[in-house]
Structure formats: C-alpha cells, structure tokens
Image 1 (cartoon, rainbow, N blue to C red):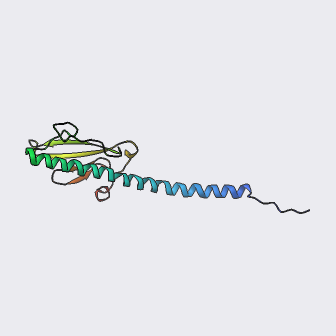
Image 2: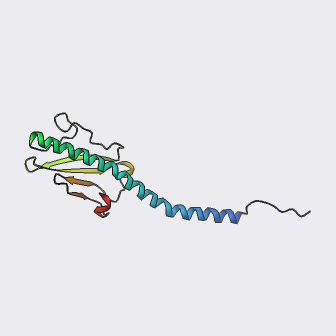
Image 3: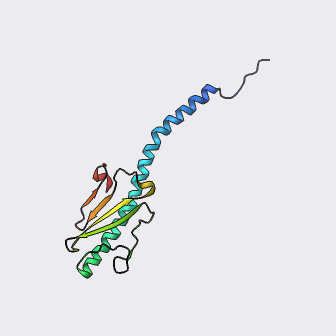
Amino acid sequence: MNRKSRGFTLIELVVVVAIIAILAAIAYPSYRNYVLRAHRADAKELAMRIASAEERYFTNLNRYTSDITGATGLNMSSTSEKSYYTAAVQTGNGNQTFVLTLTPQGMQAPDKCGKLTINNTGFKDKTGNETNGKCW
C-alpha cells in the first residue's frame, strides 16, 4: 500500500510566504507614494478655490484678506474636502499681496512635498524635498 500524499510541505509554504513578503516590501512603498500623490489633488482643489475667492475679494474691495472662514472674509472652509490639508493666508504690502499655505494633515503629513504655497501672482512652491514639478 503505497499511497501518494497530497499537499504542501513546510519548506514549500515558507518559500511562498518569503516571496509574498518580498513582493509586499517592494510594492507597499510605491503604493503609499501613489496615494500621497493622489491626495495632493485635494490640496490643489482647495488652493484654486481659495485663490479664486481671494481674487473676487480683491476685485470688490481692492485688497486681499487673511480671513478664510469669517463672514467678513472669504466665508469658506480652511480645510480641504477630504481633510488632508488645512489652509492659511498671510497678506502683505498693505493687503495688496497674499501667500496661501496648505499644510498636510493626518495620513498626508509624511508627504515629501511638505507644505504647498501659492501667491497672488500664481507662483507655486513647496517646503519639502520633492521636486516642485511633481508637487504641483
């Protein structure tokens, strides 16, 4: 009675688990970078909404405002739609210029771009060590 046994040996199982672990170690960082890059769209959308509101405010009152949320300011949210970024505006030169800063929050905080900024002339910058073209 010579029966063939079916199934996996322990060594085969260990090899498969090792292969899966290696693939996961390679794939997860790439996936994480992709997710962070995709979430930057949330910041870009918020930046464009606030910058447009600032320009409308300037058209009406001939000055910019640093008040995003107040009724006498822009009267809008300073948090992005999906809460990955918060916004702050600094005005300068007698309220004739502004710099909008978008700060990553929560799971977006480790993003290599860091804080994103845009000013009243449309100049875009960042504080992180990623190249600016990839951030904006």
